[in-house]
Length: 377
Image (cartoon, rainbow, N blue to C red):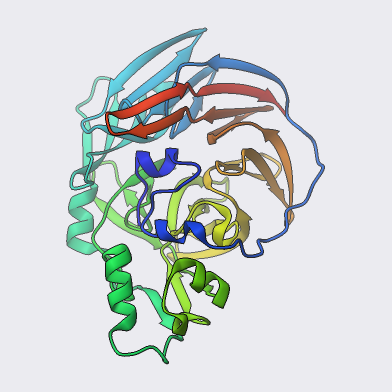
């Protein structure tokens, strides 16, 4: 499972490994709270961006990536300029330290066979970490089992494998495949960076020399399929009651003041509500290499940000809102079309929205551009 520009922009029909699930009936999702303090006083800083996959704030400057065109950009003193273009066609994650003197960004080519983290410091040679090379060598989730992990025992031999191979080009049960798609980056300190790899289902560490290691593999995300869901899928009826382990798909990573990491994930299947709102937030212990889910029920959790008061803000792309999570309760702080990335600085919340992009036989068509907007909290 991974994210592509098609998957992230196809709001109505998410082009993921499990696209065929899109016709299923929605299951119950975790209840969200209501009320709370709304963000206010919006100020549009950019109304021409296409796919602001990542953002970072350094002083008064707003750094962002435009994944569609493969650039790192900076809004400074009212001007918006391209800082660099990626070594590959897609640029997603961005983080900035030392006021912009050092920044790091992730890049991927179209088939994810070449993915990197570039660490750039003014006056020094770039450090480029080969993330796809690490994935091919280590495949950190190679020992994790996905697909049907329980039930379906009444199916005829080979029946489920035949169905899943025809529908998804995957067996009914499989282990983690070699796939790297770095999507977010956060500075850890001491010259090291954390990378959320949406293809590898893990969080990686890259040191100042570009050496890569694994911080944690995100756990699979199980769902027990009802007879109604199985029928909607067009799958053999014997699959009702089976438990399917979807892959975790990390979309952002942030470090808190205690050194713990917070990670948002997509559910690894349909991003529409057909199986319920299953996006989640995990807290990762980098010393124990463990991950604990602290909240779920988000519809397209494509980014998160950490508030000074211990709150967590989540961009829900497919719900059209930014949600605040605090003490286990949630509230909506911003309602906007296609919120894709968020960042917090002081009392301001920055929201990057995805352009309205349609894909046709002649390529992508931008019906309306995205934006970057600052709100007061």
